Every structure is written in structure tokens, then in C-alpha cells.
Amino acid sequence: MNVINPATEEVITSVKEDNLASIEFKYDLLRKGQEQWNLVPLKERIAVLQRFADLLKENLEQNATILTSEVGKPLQQSRNEINGARNRIKWLTENAEKYLADDIMNIDKGLTEKIVYEPLGIICNISAWNYPYLVGVNVFVPALLAGNAVMYKPSEFSTLTGLEIEKLLKKAGVPDNVFQVAVGAADVGEILLHLPFNGYFFTGSYKTGKHIHEKVAHKMVPCQLELGGKDPLYIADDVADIKNVAAGTADGAFYNSGQSCCAVERIYVNEKVYDAYVDEFVKEVKGFKLGIPSEEGVYIGPLTRRPQLEFVENQVKEAVAKGATLAAGGKRVTGKGYFFEPTVLLDVTHDMSVMREESFGPVIGIMKVKDDAEAIKLMQDTEYGLTAGVYSASKERAEKILGKINAGTGYWNCCDRVSAALPWSGRKHSGLGSTLSHIGLRAFTQPKAYHLKG
Image (cartoon, rainbow, N blue to C red; front, side, top):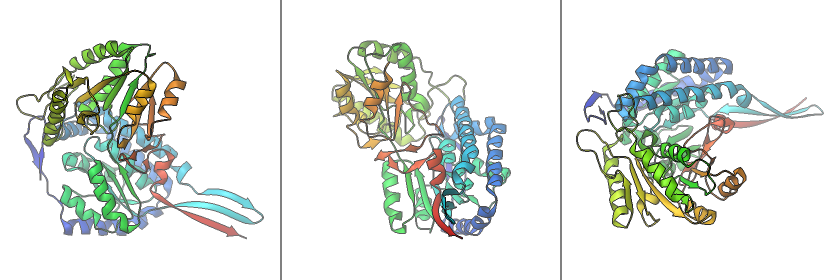
């Protein structure tokens, strides 16, 4: 399997794909290793994962360079991602004992009632390419902390990063028969769906997540899906600093070339501040530096996958054909690489794909609304439910609006962020289950109730 640099379209290297025989061999290793790993005291498992975080710091530049070369994100954003992963590992390891230890629920007249959190067993983690470190540690770190073994399948678009993760985990002390990497594309993923894993954890598109869920449903094992979004943002008429709000929300829309599940995907602006906001927003976007992502100062790199170029291009063409106005960008960049100009569309409506289907690229539609009620109605007009944001001077007003939006995460005066202390979960077509927080630590366990008398 060739690994392609999306900025140059050159082959970085070729890697050997797994097949049925090699996957079954790796699964058998994990089956034999999981019970022994679970016997390792939790404190020691925590120390191993903390050592992994240290190794990420020690190898930051090398791993950031590899990540940039295969997914195309600007080098500083690759550094940010790895450091962000280290912060999540810190929270997970510091809180593992608190949330994975036995819970004594009641002691009364010689009867003790407690909950023990046992590992699920062997976890299948089919991961994503857009943030391989961040979405990876959301799953394999708490899974390992809880005593599970993990089969980790990185996306075919971030294979080299997946192999680096494996190398550093094992250098940190994770046994070979506790963490294995499955290398390949969709056909390798299909093989994994037929093996008797004790839980499936997927990050990616709704279409693939739905397929996985249907394929494994008969197994009656946990299946968590972290899927896409069409994340809305509302700019209320009482925002104090239009320029800073425009800059922050433009970053929320275009960071990582918009290839984020929680990226701002559509913006609704109160008519009283619409013109001022749009002027500042467009000015900010036109200032983004597009170019080879390994060069310092570049903010917009290439899209990771060639087919996404055509998808984004078609969204823009359809919108313009239906009456949208191009305020910035709008086309592919000629020459090598999968580059698309950062694009701002005005005069958009919900009849346009760009306001309804996940773009996952550097394009945003901005729509004028008359009041909060219209904003809420439009924000709710979606099959997705990952995040929603409100910019307003009033926390009370923002929380009132967010309380009416069916999404897993609400933002007030911020956007496009994830905290390890809070659960990350989607509703509707944005997924099932939660990672991160204490909920995410316990997602990789099965509780057992003990009634102990005597």
C-alpha cells in the first residue's frame, strides 16, 4: 500500500498490508496477552501510559513531521495535536484510579455492596486520519488503563503515524501481545468486523459508522461511534468585540483545513451585526497563508484525500448556482497537491448542500437571521448533533439557546475544542456513546455488582 504525500502527490513509502491470516495471528496474540495485562496493577499500567506521554514529547519533531507528510496538516498544527494528546493522557492517567477503582456503594449490618469495573477484553479500535493522535488516545489509552488489549487500525491515510504510536507504546512498556496494529484500508476493516472482539470503537463518517454498527450488532458487544457533524454557530447581536469573534470563529471553521468533526460548519449571524461580522470574517480568511504544510507560517495545507477536493468543489458550485455569493476563495489551487482555497459563501440557504451535508474542508456558509428563534430553528435543522456554539455577551442567553439544541456539546464564546474532563459524544447521526471524562474511562469496562455478606 502506497503512502501518498497530499501536498506533493509523491509516494512517501510503501507498507505491507495485513490479510486474514496476519490479522488472525495478531488477534490470537491479544487473546493470550489480555488476561496477563489485566493482572498488572493499575498503578503500573498508569506509569506505562505516562511514559508513553513522555516519549511523545521526546519525539515531538520527528512525529509531527511524519504526521504532516502523510495527512497534510501544517507542521505547527501537528505539533499542537501531539501536545494536545499528551494533555489528554495526563488527565486520563491522573484520574484512572479514581474512576476505575472499586466503588463501595453501601455497608450495612454485615452486608457490603460494591461495584467492580472489569475490562471488556479485546478492543477493536478503528481510528481516523484527521487527528490520529487525539482520536487515538481517546480510545486506546483508557482501554489499556482499564486492562484491555487493543487491536488498533489507523486510517490508511495515517498509517505511518499509527506505526509510530505502536512503537512508542511498546517502548513505554505495553507488551507486544497487548497492542497490535492492523495495517490496511476498508478490506482490512471488514476482516476486523468478523472477529470476536469484545467491543468496537470507531471514529469516522456516518456512512462507515452505520455499516460497522449493523455488522456487529448481532454480537451484543459495545459499539461506540464517534461520527461527523454539521456544527452550527450563532453570533448574537450583543457580541462585544466583532473583530476578535470573527477571528476566533474563522479559526474554528478553517483549522486543519476544516477537516475536524467539531469544526464550525455553518454560521448564523444576527442581522444587527451581520455586515460588521462578515467584513471582519472575510478579512481574516483572506489573510490565511496557504502552502506546503512543512513550511513554517502556513495555516492552510492540502486536503488529505483527493476525492474530497471534488466533493467540496461541487458543494461550492451548487451553492453559487442556487444564488450564493462567493466572498472568498471558491476553487482548487492549480498544480500539485490537494489544495483548495479557503472559501466563504454568503446568501446561503438550507436548500444548499453546503448548509446540510458535512463539508470536511475549507468552506463555510454564513447566513443572516433576524433573531434567536430563527437561529435555533436553523441550527436544529440537521441530521447531526455533535456540537453547537453561541457567541453572546450573556451566558444566560447562550445557555437558553444551547439548551434547545440537540447536540452532545455546547459552546459559549468558544468553538472547536475538546476537554479530556468532559465527555465527547454525538447525538443522531453524530454517533453513539462517549469517550473522555470519567464516562470515557468506564466505557472500556463492564461493571460487576457484588453483594458480600458476613
